[in-house]
Image: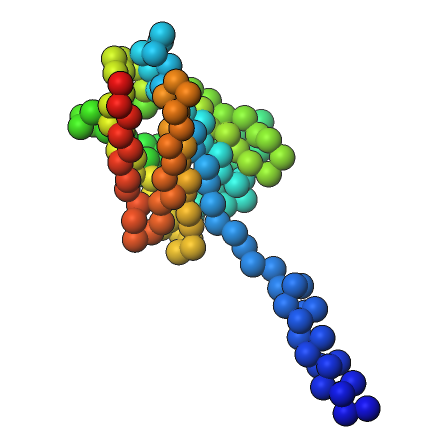
Amino acid sequence: MKKLLFILPVLLIFISSFNTLHKFYVSVTQIEYNEEQKSLQIISRIFIDDIEEVLKKRYDENIELVSEKQEAKVDQYLSTYLNQKLAISVNGKEVFFSFIGKEYDNDLVLCYLEIENVTSLQTISVSNQVLMDFFDEQQNIVHVKKRKKRKSLILEKEKDKGMLKFSE
């Protein structure tokens, strides 16, 4: 009986630990070098509820990401925010992206960006501070692909910038 009285509370604590929801803050950005088009094609995947919360706090408390009526405003806010929080340098020179558009995939917004006139890719530096000013636990994963080589960075609040080298 004493054994059962000991095991039961331990079992209850163990089971209840799985019921505690822990919000996971992460975004994934894919950058692919297209040699033929001499461009970097970028897709940034961000959870809708997280980015919507940020856009509400920064720009407009009434904004709704999936609202067709506010689509132009959402695009403008996303473009502005990403330009403030995502910085890229190629071969030691800062480059700037164009916001091409977005689409929704379940609970994610996929933001499409492009950097043109990239004649070669030896090094790429990426600073990705997306959502870091609102969520301390935010991690931004960056994958860069050149031909068949793929390299990755995991960026966090204290280390929001990294550099990758590609040899020819």
